[in-house]
Image 1 (cartoon, rainbow, N blue to C red):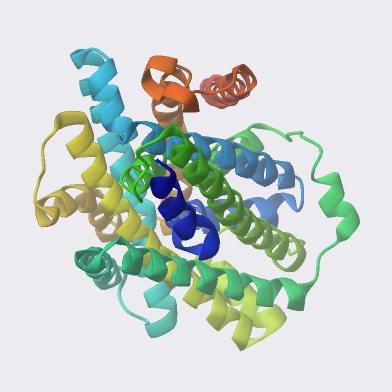
Image 2: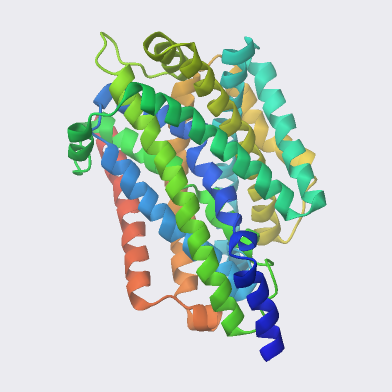
Length: 412
C-alpha cells in the first residue's frame, strides 16, 4: 500500500502537477469556439458592456460543470454517457442519445463555419472549400491520438493560446472602459434581443458535448486503485479545471471588451464576424485584423477536432457502438455544408447554433448532477450536499432562461 502511494506521489508531486493537467484544456477549447466569437461580438457591438455578467456567470458555471464531469470519470472510470446507460432506463438513454446527436450537429455547424470564415478572411477561399478543409484538419488532430493522448492535448492547448494571444493584442491596443465593465457585472436585460443573446452566450460557453467528453478524458488517466489516489488525482484535476476555464473566461471577456470598446457606437452595429475583422483593421490596424483571423482559424480547427472526439464518446457511451469516424463526420458535417451552400448568413447561423446548444445543456447537466450526488455511484468522491444544491441551482437557471426565451419569442 505504502509503495503504491509513493509511486503515485512521485508522479503527482515530485514531478509536479503538470503531467496531470490537460483534460480541462481540451474541454476549454469548446468554450471559445467560433460560436463565442459570434455571440460575444454581437453582444459587445450592439449592447456594449451590458452582458459582461453573462460571460462571468457562464464561466463560473463552466468551472463547476467540468469539475463534476472530470470527477465522475475519476471516481467511476466511466464517462457520463456510459454512466447514463448503466443507471437510467433504456428509453431515457436512447432519448438522451438522440438529443446529444442534435447537439453534435449544432456544434459542427459553429466550428466548421468558423474555420471556413477564417480561411475566407485570410486567403479569400470560398466558404464551402474552407468548411471541407476545417473538417480534414479535425481528422488530422484526432490522428495525434494514435501517439497517445498527450500529443492531442498539447496541440489543442497550443491552439487555445493562439486564440488568447490574438485577443490580448486587440484588448491592449483598444483599451477597456473600466467603469462600464464593472457596471456590466450587474445582471440585467434590455428586451428580447438581449435574452436571445444571453442564451446564445450561455450555449456558446457551457457546451453540452464537452460535459460528455471531460469524463472520458479523465476516466483512464493514471492509475488510481485506492480512494487516496483518486482524491489526490481529483485535487490536481481541480487545478486543471480552474486554470483552463480561467483562460477561456479571459478570452471570452476579451472578445466582448474589444467589441464593446472598438466596434460599438457606429451608425450601424457590427454583428458579423467579417464586419468585426474589417472594423478591427480600421480601428487598430492590419496586425489586429490578422491576429483576429488567425485566432478564429485556431478556434475552428481545434474545436472541430474536439467535437469529433466527443461525438465518438457520445455514441460509444450511450449505445455501446462505434461508427467509422469518416461516416460519423459526414453525417454531422452535412448540415453545416448545406448552410454554407445555401448562402445563409454565417454569423446569424452561428448565433442560432449556440441557442440550440443552450437547449441541450440541461439534458447533459441534470444527469450529471443526479449521478454525482449518488454515493453508490461515486463512492468517497460523491458530491457534498452544498455542491449538489449549487449544481441544481445552475441547472434551474439554465432551464429558466430557456423557458423565458421561448415565452418571449412566442409573444413576439
